[in-house]
Structures are given as structure tokens and as C-alpha cells.
Amino acid sequence: MVAAAHRFILRHREGLLGSLEEAKRRPAADRVLAAKTFETKLLALLQQLSDEFKESAVGPLRRTGDSPQELARLHSACGGALSDMENALDRGRSQGRALNALSAVTFSAAPVRGQPSLLAAE
Image (tube, rainbow, N blue to C red; front, side, top):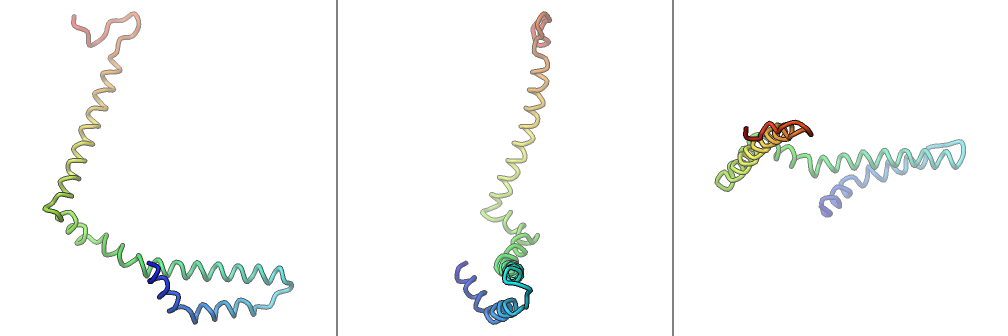
């Protein structure tokens, strides 16, 4: 990633230097205003470069990785082990919801002081 960042900066070096020179040459009423204006321009430039770098470095990977074809390939990888694990998790979640519902009924059937338990044998 460091090498990619270095290449990105080298590709954008001339434009970056030109933008910085332009921002420094902007006239301002006083030094404080000039510094604020330069800081604002510099932050906007750095944000733009950061966004471009993220898109160039991560964007293609994310678009490729999230494609339906790639997700299908991942699901069938390792003999379908990923799909098997996801199915097991889904079954576990369903069983967990059933157990939670059962425990809610069981706890609501707990005896109230002075009244017999709903679960007690008659």
C-alpha cells in the first residue's frame, strides 16, 4: 500500500505543486486571512487527493469483490464450505430464536407467589 501511495503522489506531483503555488499566491487583506484561505484550499486539495487515492486503490477491489460472480465463486470455494457454514449459522439462529421464544413462555409460566405453577403436575 505504501508503494501504491508513493506512485499516486508521483503521478499527481505536478498538479499538487501547481495547486499549492496558486493557493499561496491568492491575495488576502491580511496575514491571518491569507493563512486561513491557504489552509482551507490545502484541506480541500488533500481531501480530493485522498478520495481519489482511495478509489484508485480500493474501489476496483471492492467492485470486483462484491460482484455477484465473485460472491458465487466464494460461496463455492473449498468445496462449498462457506455456504455450509452460513447455512449452519442460519439454522443456529433459527434454533436460537425458537429457544428464546420457549424460554419466554417458560419464564412467564413461572409460579407467582400464592398461585400454583402452570408447569406443576396436578
